Amino acid sequence: MTIGVGKDVISYCTKCKLTLSHLIVSMKNESTIGKVKCNTCDSIHAYKDPSKVKARSKKAKAKQINPNESIADIWMNAINSSKAKSQSYSIQKSFQIGDIIDHPQFGPGVIDKLIDTDKIQVIFRHNIRTLVHNR
Ligand SMILES: [Zn+2]
Image 1 (tube, rainbow, N blue to C red):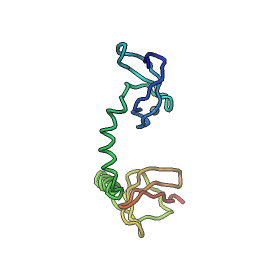
Image 2 (cartoon, protein in one colour; image 1 turned 60 degrees about the horizontal axis):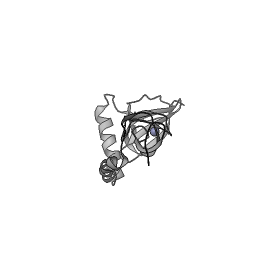
Image 3 (cartoon, helix red, strand yellow; image 1 turned 180 degrees about the horizontal axis):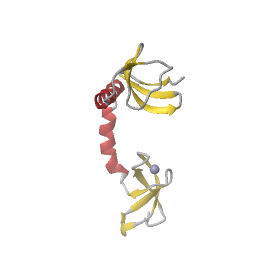
Image 4 (spheres, protein in one colour; image 1 turned 120 degrees about the horizontal axis):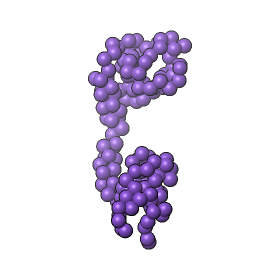
C-alpha cells in the first residue's frame, strides 16, 4: 500500500478520541505521515499510529472498570473545587454552574451544566442526573 497526500489512512483522532479513517494532508517524508484530516470531525492534526495509542487506551479502560469510583472522583473534585455554599434543592430556585445543592434523595451534588433554562445537569456521589430548576 502506498501512502501519500490525499490517501486515506487509519489514524487515532485526538478530537473524536477514536481510531477513524483520515485523509493524509501532509507527509514528513516518503514513508512518514505528517498531518491528517479526520473524515468524521474534519479536524486536522498530527498522524497518530493507532497501534501506539492502543497501549494508552488500555490503561484508560482499566481505570473505567469501576464506574462508581470514577463518578465519585469527579464528584469529589467538583465539590472540592466549588466555592459555593451548599443550598437545598428546589425546582423553583435557579442554579448556576458550580453551585452545590443538597438533594433530599440523592444527597449533595454539584451543578455541572445548564442544559436548558429550566434544566441542569448535576453530579451526585453515585451518578449524574438531570434535574429541573427555575420553574
Ligand atoms: Zn475526529
